[in-house]
Length: 503
Image (cartoon, helix red, strand yellow):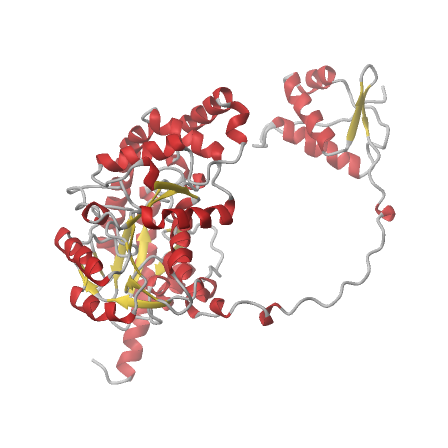
């Protein structure tokens, strides 16, 4: 029979069986073993020959057809199709010299703050790198099955209507769910105050575009979220670092800075990134009083909402103290990063302007994902999910801290994480933080050096560790590797100091 093809399935191959069939047939077609016009076996016969289910072979044949490698005729069978002749492709003219992009790129992008990530990009390939940079849940903590049920429900019951463009401010049902949840947590919000965004990063971007002109002063804590630093720098803002203490930003320093025409103060009152601290209730009240008297808008980023590991819940949100506070939240950290669904609670005086910017940016966030998330929330799945992940985060934090106590050299301190998923290591003053970063990288552990989160040009002596993306066992090993890297880096530092006569 002309349809013999002689393929074999490898039981040790971990790929799906249909993919093995596809790959072997593609190879035979391209090397000429199966010439044009060759008739492939009937799916039932090939399935019997390979001792597999007929549906497996049907799926493989469908894939070959979609690739344009086979063609089928009812009553005759499936045949190898003619491949395109590369000589039929018209010759292309030699391209003209490329555009000199450096001459047209905006000067606002020529800033050190935007080049930090490139400078500190991972350069050493380690086959077993332990990632304490990534602030996202490990794959085993993502609610795949429950979210699939919600997605299936939406496609079955909402149907094609879920595949259209979304309202610019978001699906009304989702906005209502978010407003209700915020109200339960003491954050005043109505559905009409809530705007759905593509992650909290877009919310920050919309506020930046609405308020900031090039050169405008913007205040941030001296150590802050690197994504916000980059975003405000790209907008052309003049970034001003506000010093502070364990309680929060220094109010006396703010009283002087407010005289400089400040357009915005960006804050993370809970789970301050990168340090993990919390602004106290008394300091929040002082900050709101200062904002009211100075006329400076406050942007409150509550990215770590619901991630309370132990201790008491955080103090009242700043928006609960002042309805003019812009409040940002996200589902990326506590649920699913790939949703890219965040939200912005905005006062009426600016909401219509933000809506116009949102429409210009993307015409609205994914309606399908908004429907699925709404179903997820309405079924109570988020509460169930948090009951699962919070104990796991607590166990991972404890494992990391126990190993840090055992392996870190003297002079390195950190704050116990009651909330969020980060630890901030404070290194001895004068430590070359980038040298620590590179030493850790060489030993196969990835960390975030303080320079990435520094509002000023010089990074403080600290590194941020996350404990959400790795298992307790790997975190223990990561702390061990980091301890050796710190011994190396700090040892080099002490050697240099001794040659300078410093004791």
